[in-house]
Image 1 (cartoon, helix red, strand yellow):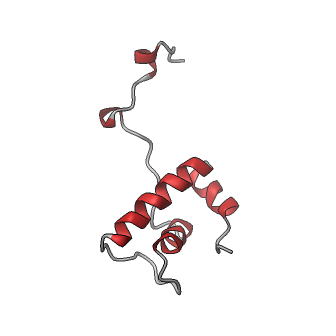
Image 2 (image 1 turned 120 degrees about the horizontal axis):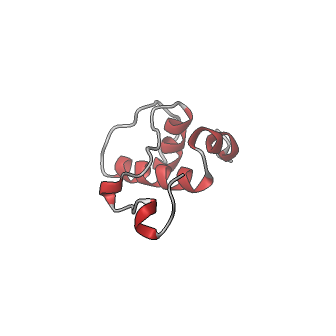
Length: 80
């Protein structure tokens, strides 16, 4: 069982999708050799990444238009 629970982490990040993407990207960074931001008892990069999210050391930023996300006007949506 992963501690902290995914439900608590989802509240911190905003959605389960964002939690999965954020923790996977951070786990990949840890596997590539970046140092962990929290001390944990596990050697598993994914568990460490989730502990970092729980501690508030890693946060999800909204996508930037320059990163390839289309603004609503480009896909026919109206800005309200």
